[in-house]
Image (cartoon, rainbow, N blue to C red):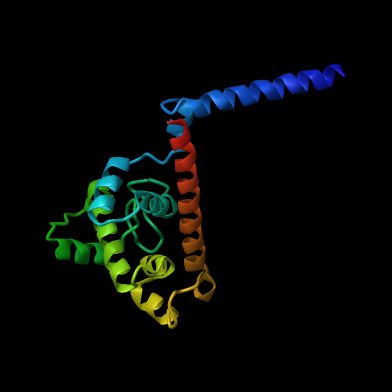
Length: 186
């Protein structure tokens, strides 16, 4: 009986602390729990190219874990894991100079990455699965897989790309739910 009482009091204390942290949007809980790294840059370019900033944050989270100097085994660089050749092409189209090491600069990487996403969105008429598949495996692969739009995740033959698409979409859903909860307490 006494043990149950202490377990109940302990659970009540934990619930109270978590409730307090959830009610204080400026507190440590929100700082740790939200992906606010480079939020201002993401918001700016997401607005410019009309993307949900949470979608971009989900992509950045999956691609690089918000590490500005991340590099993949295939040579992709930065927050949005841009291939250097793709970045050079995007910079040329945007009229931006791209200096050596520029892809590690969050401002440059996010700008070019979201611009690239906007071109993919245009090509794939807003088909999110195809956009993400093209971002990860290249537009020519996504075109081949998307015979009858919209592209379905299970029709992506590359396991890495299938996993990438699922992870970005799942992270995006989670961020949207989290944003709703946060807005309730804001």
